[in-house]
Image 1 (spheres, rainbow, N blue to C red):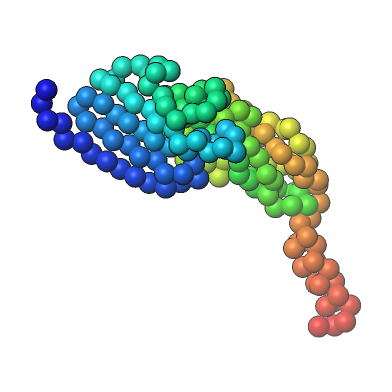
Image 2: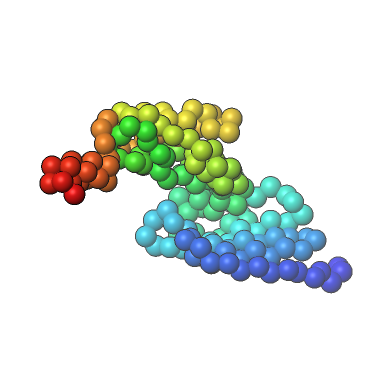
Length: 169
């Protein structure tokens, strides 16, 4: 067997420390499970680009952890939560989320689409604001109501203008 030179990368994130080692023969990814409060340190090993099986996953203390490790290694997904601009609403922004988790590698592209979008008031909880984002079949939905009207900053500004007119300032 030949000597394999491995590279190692470690980075911290919300799910703890991700350690990825790879060489010509294998890849090992370590991460913290976030499915339950135990926070198990999971390890997934993959050899020669083979498919990951249950025997390649270690460190889990429940079946949900094993399932999480498999999905996180093969096709990581995240629920995207953010805000969109609202025209003519009593609030300038409305909170939104993806209806189901999106592929992790598409999150920044989805944010570009969402940041360029402006909703029209009124917006109701559950309204589909962006349908089928990036052709994924996943919708971006509102998570709060935004009624028609002025934002509080516009209302205050308008009120102050009226007060100044009445008092001759």
